[in-house]
Image (cartoon, rainbow over all chains, first blue to last red; front, side):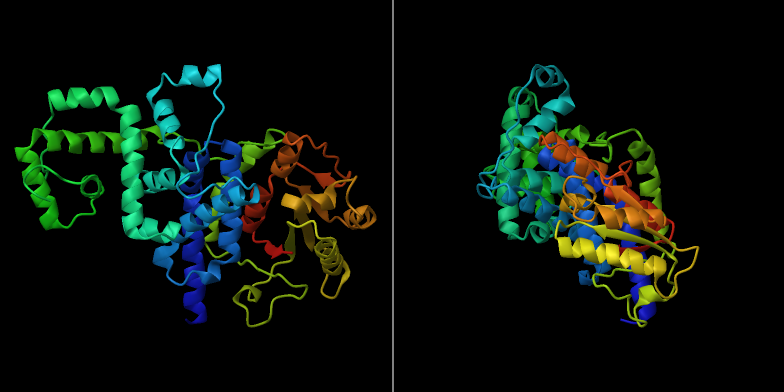
Length: 184
Length: 228
């Protein structure tokens, strides 16, 4: 790679990085439900990304690379606190308070609570797919797991969410189903 | 997929997520046409996905937690804008050693006369290097009156600026007298305080910013970034 193309790549990378802060934060928040921790994780991600940007060979892969760093930062965080049980067992336990109960009335709060109650390995996949629209292959790359594992964990995660969030409405749907149509 | 309506959950998800090829997708549409139950399952999955997307649509972009005072929120917007401006060609140096970047390094092409040194470790030797580097920049060969140097400390590097911990209070005072500015990450302070640690800073330290915001601010302004 020539000097000029290297500099251009660096500019493009920083542009991507600049646009990613909100998305990284949203993801970190979804994974932790802890605003301060989410901030810290994003900060760590920035430092690591800036420090290691030369490791990024393909600028088109920058997005997945950043989220992979974020995922690694979270893993490091839990490992440092010996809180990592296993990929499938880690569940973020949140202390319940009357405030939480009040907020649960709102749909968004209920959904976020359900998402964060998933084991982390499922939570990460559901949010990477649903919030960021990553393809399964990209999620596999970000989390360093096989695509098949992505699919199975996604299924388990969504099943759990469905049971929590659509339990009542699902029966209604089956009784009077809305038809899904292909839209061209 | 078969015609008895037994479509796996993985296949349903792949459909919802656009992971199926055209042929499989068409087949699933046909099956859903014939099976109200399958159709309902697909609608459920799509609804669930949309609920998750909706739940995080209005999540703030972060950077508003752990600040010691109100200045951080103000800086946040600037910080985001700052990184956007990086794409316009700000030159950033990434040094990890005491020496300046080599001449063939792209970052050396347009060296600025403003330096931000970033300390993230409580290793006294690294702290010493940061202070020595600041001193050399201010007083060494090539130093000018226009040269400006800042030291930002966060994570365990905050120890550098904690008055009851730092072994370098004298050097900090001397450098501050030469207009070197010191910044203690307000988020690192908040974290320590939340753990019950009473944080006392040396009088030369400013705690108005998070380390990230200060770094981003200076990058925007074209400062050289030096990770110690």
